[in-house]
Length: 411
Image 1 (cartoon, rainbow, N blue to C red):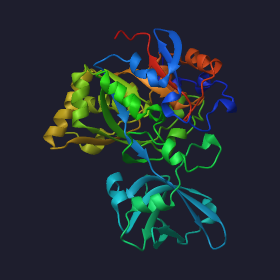
Image 2 (cartoon, rainbow, N blue to C red):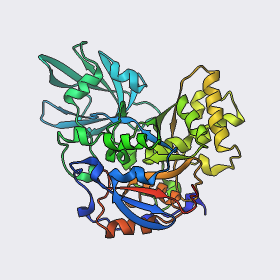
Image 3 (cartoon, helix red, strand yellow):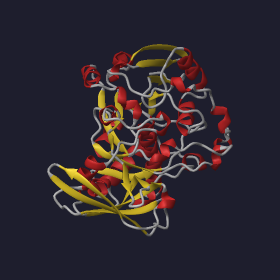
Image 4 (cartoon, rainbow, N blue to C red):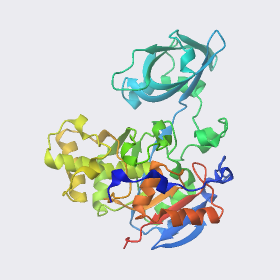
């Protein structure tokens, strides 16, 4: 199979609007759980998930947290301008930009861009007993970006940009929900373990986990580790080309602590991944470690994983050695965490290096996420989705979940 020549129409299925969950269940761990193992299908409640995982295994979660990334400004003419934060620009670091006390710049998508001629947008906001004036100005575009460079400034240094967003920003729920954000989404569209701000969409496989389920995992001796991948708006980008070779994947930023790498090595490099974002982070590690095997002194900016890197040449380093190469790299540079980015596309033809079990929701037709699931299930995605559609499972972000174990799994 030539991955680039895969036709996206082969990954289409009929998804009636009524099967898309517009709101979550009142108890997040009471969603349904589809079970797929050795080609057999079944179902249970999500709160019973620990019963289907082996003691002593390692689960990897994405601990990113969704920011209130959608800002609205009203021009003096009455036109409404929407500014959607995508990624930090100045400073180009998630942690630092949220701590800024006076100004910062983001790369943004702009709604009603034609009506924003370049004038400064102004909005008064109330934080506690103070009125703060927030301004937004378009600056010259970065040469490498298709997005607008927007500088934000505010007249009160008592507040960080994080606090500004909390006061004025709107949580960006997925467009396919076809509804406005509600106050409840601020809680329900976050995982209970999310802590690192930066995503514009939730890692939705994690929305099913409650504190009770996490405790059950701990009681069973299942190790929990966390990585960070800040989910970008590109996660909703449809594949519009006939063949996926013409589709450009979006870049997302990842952070993996040294202790996580060591833990995966200690578990024979076999992982239970919570969600597709965790998958993309974990699997990207192999290609980073492979680069380091060829050149241990490779500059940090070249550790980025390109879209087609997994398919362009044979990689001979073992999965464990790839992780050890990253650990050694961190040690040589006195680093406690790997900070880089990935553009990886996982599609049929891809051979998984680390992920042996996958917990994930049900994804949109003709999406890169469905390609990832198909690659994991060795092409058996359709029987899983047919079962879910015929057994009243709820789809997409607020929908139900699945535990997928490929037919070749022998754990």
